[in-house]
Amino acid sequence: MTILANQKLLRQENIETAELDGEWLLLNIDTHGITKVNELGGYIWSILPEYPTVAELAGKIHSEYGVELETVKADVQAFVKMLLEAGLLRNE
Amino acid sequence: MTYTLHTQVGKSSIVFQIQTTFLYTELTARFRSLEPGPNHKEPDMKVEVYDFYGKPYDDGPVEMEDIGGEYVYTRSDYKLAAAPDYSSAKIYVHDDLALKHALINLYSAWLIHRREGLLIHSSCVVEHNRAWMFAGPSGAGKSTVADLSVPRPILSDEATLLLFEPDGSITVHDSPFRSEMEEACELPSSSLAGIHFLIQSQNVQRVGIRKGDALIKLIDKVFYWEHNKLETAKLIKLCKQAVEAVPAYDLYFQKNDTFWGVIS
Image 1 (tube, rainbow over the protein chains, first blue to last red):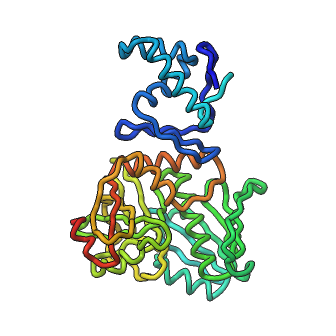
Image 2 (spheres, rainbow over the protein chains, first blue to last red):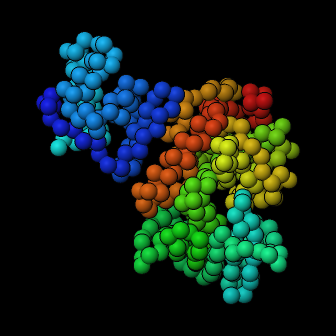
Image 3 (tube, chains in turn blue, brown):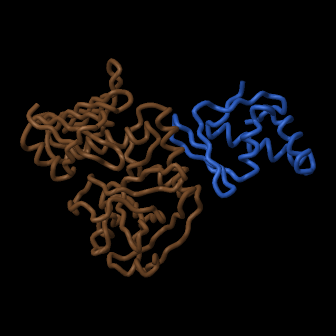
């Protein structure tokens, strides 16, 4: 699955989140699936409503963490793909 | 109705209206009778209990429906019809097992609805005024742990009753929902010190686990039959509150009392 850099992403409804010990759990109330992500993954999840594309997310993380933009884009792309496959995100 | 029983579970007052002598005997064995004083308030929960329902439990699931503004839970051996806020309910049962299960179902739903606490499939034992919970899959040894821990006070051997205090701490109350150790605990309650998930092993050891993993394990142990998403979200938040408040461990244990050596 290729996600276009400017394709709008939406968080699925009915996902409860819990941040514990620097880990984030994303609990899907509809499917009872639980996804565990690290702190950066949790950060991306939390800012997704404001930065709803791979390009915007990568830009924000690049400016916050100072990591090289191309690397960030590839990582965000991979992470978003995982969230889409886990049913936690959907394309608009 | 033939009988009335006023009682208290945790901090909540319950009044039972009971149809038969058999059910009255079962309920008075589990719930202490507390006659209300002259200034008694409305009970938190009113429960009518009827006999002669259905057939013995057949390992089937609990079915749930929303019928005309009532939540109706049905299993082969009982039917529970509760108001949406669980403040009143009618229970129709086949036998004592059905009665216990229906009451666990009702009380757990009531606790979650009011965000007051959780009823967890586990045993709980007090040592030095600290309550330790032991959860695990069926056959893991929850009731064995309780049995091996005598003469320590046993707050539960099957369903542990946790109540959240305003300061964020958790109190474990004497559970009326018991499987074998039917005697009421000599302590009405004790502060929760920690949660153990039982794993049978040749080596006795206790290993701290991350709070995220504890949350996943704990959610699975709460008596809860999903009927709406808001209540499920509340359940998750309460479980999170619990794992944030106390440490959780995997407890590898043999079926003897040496495990207390790694706890205290």
